[in-house]
Length: 460
Length: 80
Image 1 (spheres, chains in turn yellow, cyan):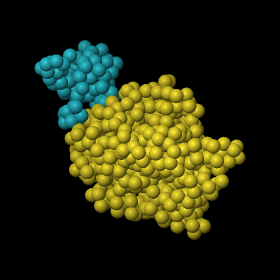
Image 2 (tube, chains in turn green, purple):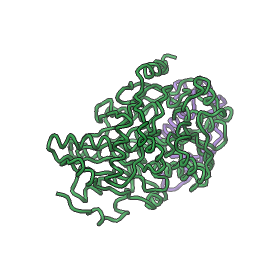
Image 3 (cartoon, one colour):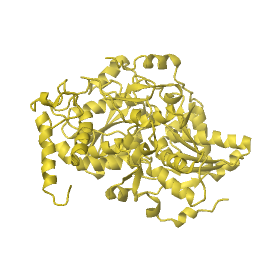
Image 4 (cartoon, one colour):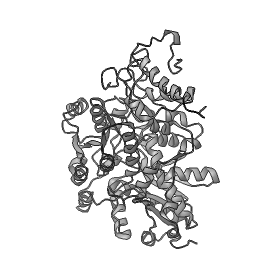
């Protein structure tokens, strides 16, 4: 029995957390692999002669490596959060009725901020810390453009210059995200470009390449290396990024508590893992604390199946192999995913923390083909009146599968998924689906085998 | 100063040596790990802006950065 809209009795300040949740405090035995980085000797591009500059602000590094369960959110950042948070937690009643399921389907909607996705949660925090550190420019790689949009807005708020390397296929498929970034004063470069060594190498290997986030990241890394007071800021994967996203799950816990609910299954799409982790990690804490049986399901595209078909190994985070290695589920840093519309899920590796948890089977993973994902996205838009981002539609597909499973079993399963962003700037993708011309593009075995064959040799 | 993150005998560390020299091997990432270890060792916390502003090229540069904060801590009453 649920209480209707009881969350409305809570004020925003009561729902929006004052601290981020650090899952490292609750992960015995997996923290080492998820915390370590391995630099390959002599491959890092040094920035300004012999000078050594920190890759990220020390504060963010301490957040990444620390074991404190809760990390205080700077008041200035929390005040920014309060401009649009808490985000809505809603029940998908129309979808439930359509599926004729006894399951109760809830979703946390992260598309209500100006950039339309969850990425702003960490972009604001990072821009805040970089500004305090004295950095004047931020650069990054972006897939579908959600991260680039978020970082460009956050950079503008803190008076920082911003340069975004946007994966070519998305640069062309999603021009309005590029416009959004440019409105915020960012320079947007189609990646691979000829302006960096990494871009030229990728173009040399395949002149017609659609690009990949690992190439875009390599280009941004080079961009930062050649400039004073310029740093690479990343929107997924790193521990501190996942930490910043835990505002999502913490809010959801409070909002569900007000409804006397707790999820049996928590679902999120996985590019590297920040929206999945942002929702799932705080519930993992509750699971550990209260002995719950909640399952966590990471949904990935068949075109980029790093968890379900990748391997758990040390690998680079970028195409060229100039970034430090992390241990992760990976398809190989040279893997280039087929050009699906969910550009945010085309990254070759999963976050170290997500990977370590998957390796320990603390979370599950499934992969779905593109058309099944868009079918779910259209169904959701028709029933719940929100057009989901193609990335988020993966989580919807996962939720529908769980709801149908509940119908078969006759169980009142409580399902929670992360609707990580809206798809209003992805309508060309929906047009493609509705035209009937969209194809499923599972990653070919030989492509995966080839890129896994180029994993770094740790004996070097 | 004893730099525990580096597997070289402290007496062999010449302050003029470059942090980025292959035998020292400090890069943009290991610099963070090194500073955090030093912070723990001495019970200090170096602000982000000081690390970014420091012209860290040699071991002496890093030593000077740490000593500045050790001195500052000693001059703050009530700090242990």
